[in-house]
Image (cartoon, rainbow, N blue to C red; front, side, top):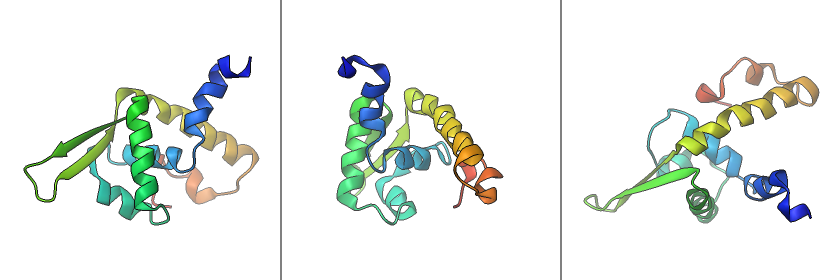
Amino acid sequence: MRNDCTVYKTMDYLSKKWTVMIILELYKGSRWKRFSEIKRSMEEITPKMLSERLRNLEAEGIVERKADSEESPTMVCYRLTEMGLDLIPVIKGVKSWALRWKVDNPACASQDCLVCVL
């Protein structure tokens, strides 16, 4: 049955719009990032969608969240978990495949995703 397929199950949450881009954004700098910082770096995503995707990623164990209620307003930050960091080589593998077969992007090819500014 298709629903028992590991790839099918995994792609069910990774293929949602913005998910991989949020993972890459959290990878940059490898530190806690405020919601507003993530949103600023991803201009096209709505705050509602970013919040929803971050909740999904947190539920999957890919992202962890911390809230500092001593700040006003409450400061909420996110970072990749060990599981999330383990996805980075997979994403870089997709990038390598795309650069070889589908996308001609020399600027991207010459940059590590950790420091990407594209």
